[in-house]
Length: 289
Ligand SMILES: Cc1ncc(COP(=O)(O)O)c(C=O)c1O
Image (cartoon, rainbow, N blue to C red):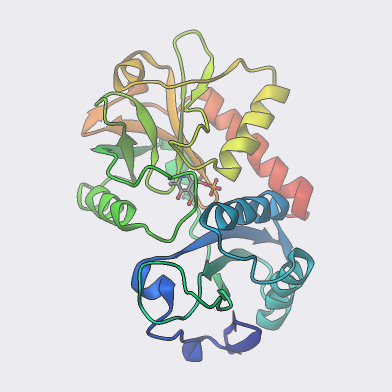
């Protein structure tokens, strides 16, 4: 079956989905994106993802390309046209096509809107059970990682470095050389020596991950103590657990950092419990077993 992509009002064969050379996303990374999982033909946390899309667009003064209800209709239509029930939706909006200058186009142009479906690559059972390795790197991103910008060069280089080190993810460390911010495409959590669940506050220095927020809500319901505060590399050395969250990562324990074992080299019970609750959250929302 032909893979169908949505581009600026049209549903077209994926291989024919092209943008102009002067698209500001292509030339200037002047745009934003979202990745939304779907299961059983239903989107997971679609509302919060589109809220964040609207936030990112607002912060960059890019117009919403379609009214929200129409945009949602396109997301549903894509599942039907591609006859897909499970996967991820990639959605990107750029400031549009205009002669290349850094400043915004003088005469407003319509934003470029792209949506297509991708194959999910979920963590394996072994990774969930045994945990994964990460490396740490200085956070070299711009100062607004709260905006889900397509300007991802530091994230690209970080992930490549992680893969070359046989690690799953690169975790960004703040300029103080100690504070753990988040992964290149994930948020980071630890369970401290007292059993509190700790994660960096969504204060502008990280992306406010949708999975992060769901996991916090699930943990709160479970009666787990939550502390949204900065934590450091030194804290990890005494932590019970350390793990990642993200749309494509779900809840993934970390057992090694920069080649050294952390948290006893074992995935812990809090991450396992939150993974189970997260999978139940998926099932409750999408009917996926
Ligand atoms: C930098 C960064 N942090 C965190 C996340 C996780 O966010 P979410 O749970 O919304 O997928 C992502 C996702 O791509 C990301 O790029």
